Image (cartoon, rainbow, N blue to C red; front, side, top):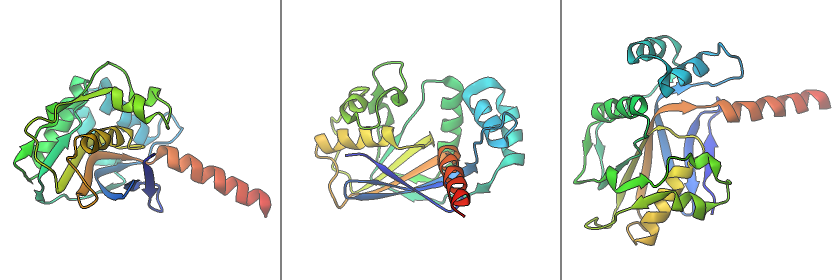
Length: 207
């Protein structure tokens, strides 16, 4: 089963629906990614990928944010941070996690890791097994989860989250009563914004 995103009127991701779970997504920074090479969001994204220093990234964030969401203390049974392999992105995500007040007995983020140096976007949208096989998961000593928190630097289509939830399901660690929430540093509205632009053009042609 696929994971379905829900967007607000500005095109920012607010929720992921997977099977019986509606996963609320809260973003610290909301950034619009457009086609223009000098688009503020695209410049910030290039910096996030490590093309400039952290000081320059912070300067861009201070000027080009579309919105900022304050995140308060988080009560949960289990926290999964999806650490990227890129050192610059990993450091940025670690700094973000350290700003959150997380109260949890289970923080086993390193139990879920990529098996290969490949991107999950290489797999077809419907290739769930391929996305699952991209990761390994050590479920030993993990208790069944009632409140699950997922943290990533960006959440686009939720494919990494879907693969992780499939691992939890396979190990009977979550059920329909498990509450799942997701947090990310950057909410990118680019792909959805393009869809809105196409629909707007189609409607204008029908007038």
